[in-house]
Length: 325
Ligand SMILES: Cc1ncc(C[n+]2csc(CCOP(=O)(O)OP(=O)(O)O)c2C)c(N)n1
Ligand SMILES: [Mg+2]
Image (cartoon, rainbow, N blue to C red):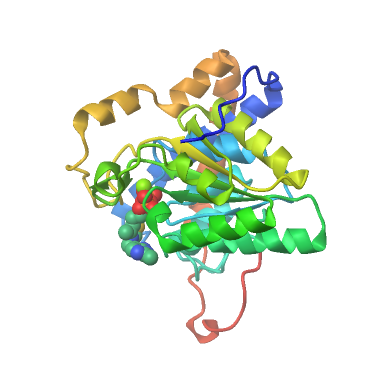
């Protein structure tokens, strides 16, 4: 399979970018653990799909983007939103269904979106965000700006028809879109080996004229470099890229799924390569990571307090209004 080989010797990353990546991995980790706690206490209802273990994909990818670039997210989308720069208080209020949230409490965890940070939205429909990203990229092409769109989605979504249709369209029109396939090796309880006969999903890209690249999704720095390269190609009018970031969930599909079907040895191996630990090793200065951790903890504490004291949406206005932020 003709995959584009990983390019060697990327330029070193400036320290503020590395610290930003660490901040987003740490913030996502702590945000997800806090959400699980709030779910157990009954403050969050419905489904909750933690991004635990996959944080480096969003943090690495979004660090390579500009504020005016777009992302399209998934049902497992808190990490994408945080890494694109979202406010933790407005996110927490949204996820707890409060009127002060990003979408006035109407979206919740699986439909959070934010005009402020150009997050075109999470999506409860698996694969539903992929054509939205291609459409947004078409809009960029028509407006002739040099923005890019990153579509996050996972292995299960890549077996849906919309994946093929979107890659085909992106290949034809050379759309400025990056397809970020977060291969966490499961779609609910179905392991990837039972869902596809091919081993590298990035290999599907060249079939549509889209370069396909595999990257270690637990290595945020590697994800950053590949995204930066793909974004550069897109901005120069050279078209889309499919990046397969290989990673693993640290638990079940959703908060109430103990994940007993997961291969314990694989889980242990991936946990030993925890993206948070790996990024801490890259920074290699505990005094710097400690400052970030302290800042995130107080932001998170304020976010929970804000969400819990915020009012529920007014039922009388339920069908009126669009997201404010
Ligand atoms: C179109 C569609 N089919 C099925 C579902 C039910 N469903 C919700 S999550 C999920 C698994 C998705 O797997 P994957 O795309 O690998 O995402 P991951 O959960 O691994 O992030 C399924 C089948 C859905 N929400 N939408
Ligand atoms: Mg998956």
